[in-house]
Image 1 (spheres, rainbow over the protein chains, first blue to last red):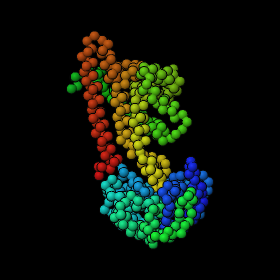
Image 2 (cartoon, rainbow over the protein chains, first blue to last red; image 1 turned 60 degrees about the horizontal axis):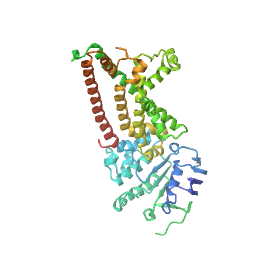
Image 3 (tube, chains in turn green, blue; image 1 turned 180 degrees about the vertical axis):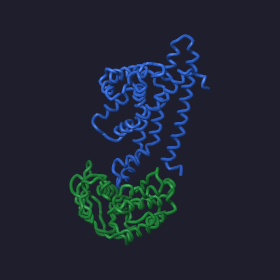
Image 4 (cartoon, chains in turn purple, red; image 1 turned 30 degrees about the horizontal axis):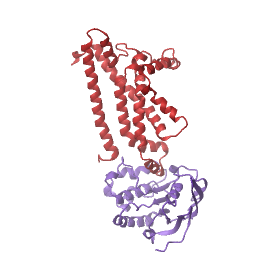
Length: 211
Length: 233
């Protein structure tokens, strides 16, 4: 259970977030520039709130640096390490994790269908392959929560259709709480258990958009 | 080939290579540290540190050499301190290492700083969310990605150290077999009648070493760049 109540300020921009997100997938929607990515960065510890708190399963995260939060983050651009192979990228989090991986490398490569890519470098992957590797990399670091920031945004329709089944499988098999930012709520029909809307400087629970 | 040069000239060639190699080695760790401070840590006094690092580039070399002599000479405040733990820099080849390192430091820091600034901080953030503490992010992401610049800086430092003359001769003088590097040997030859021939031979040696170093550096830098960019696999 993620529970937060905070305010973030930067110049004229203020974001107030007050919500709790349970297990399963919580979809985050809202207009561009409203602060959806800012919200994820606050949860991951890449930004610091002016006031308030963030708790995950009862543990206060607010004062922890990102590397001690155990929050997986799949960015809009995959952000794979270009100097490492796919295998090394996937194992990167294992170098530091003090907790057993939720699944073996083989399980993850099966789940995401990236086995044949292990010895390649990120620059030789397609956009969809990169995002699958980024998801696998985040999972293997043994996170307690996964943040996905429009992981499909950089992909064309065909690639999106290719990646969606993996996300559904992820959802069914990993049983991790996930926060998923999207501009296309239809993508998450049937997957999302809860909805948040970020608009007008507020992030708060919202009814499912009718699409 | 051994009899192309006198024993003294061989010594000067060997000493030059030794001094340049050590100057590069001892400059690298502080060079990376200072470059990182300048590139990534805004702190009060950053402009001052930047200026101090670049000082040897704009001061006449003889002034830098003289400052080193004042600080690290046998009677200098730092020289005395070092002498107590058995390190003598003045009129010693180790002093030549210090002079060359100081003179080459701005070039080294500049190259490393530029490459550190070019590293995508978003990759560093990603490493943090995967559990890597800041030191590990630096060791596994930042530094490997900046490696082409570090290599280029080290080569530049080596080349500059090979050619350093003014600060070296001021600080450690020009003692054959002890502190006489290639440039000082050429200078000595030019001071005596009939020294043109030997001076020319050593000049050719200097040019050959410089060209070999530069070509080797270019090849090395290309290899490192391919590795970092992932085009080698």
